[in-house]
Amino acid sequence: MTDKNQHNTPTLAVALQYDGETAPKVTAKGVGDVAEQILAIAREHDVPLNDNPELVKVLSKIELGDQIPEMLYLAVAEVIAFAYLIKGKMPKDYP
Image (cartoon, helix red, strand yellow):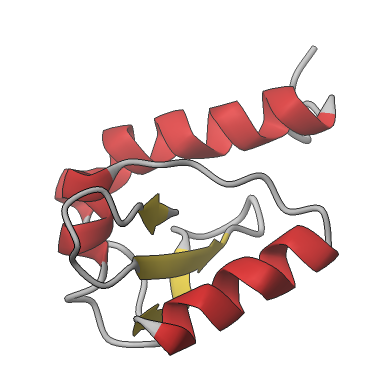
């Protein structure tokens, strides 16, 4: 997820991992050059990107390796659903 540099502020990026079993975890986050590296790696690996400045700001406050808090489940579920749709995937238990 990204916060694009639309107002001359440094780019902010947060990477999430979701295994389908537990809540998503923050696996990488950074500002400026680190954020650009995170985005470059995501693009190299064909990881869908989602631009949601408000959500990425909140997620950037979560410690690396920590699961997202329950209050963010719905917002992050929408991002995961977007990524699944873009990749043509369905959740494990989808009929």
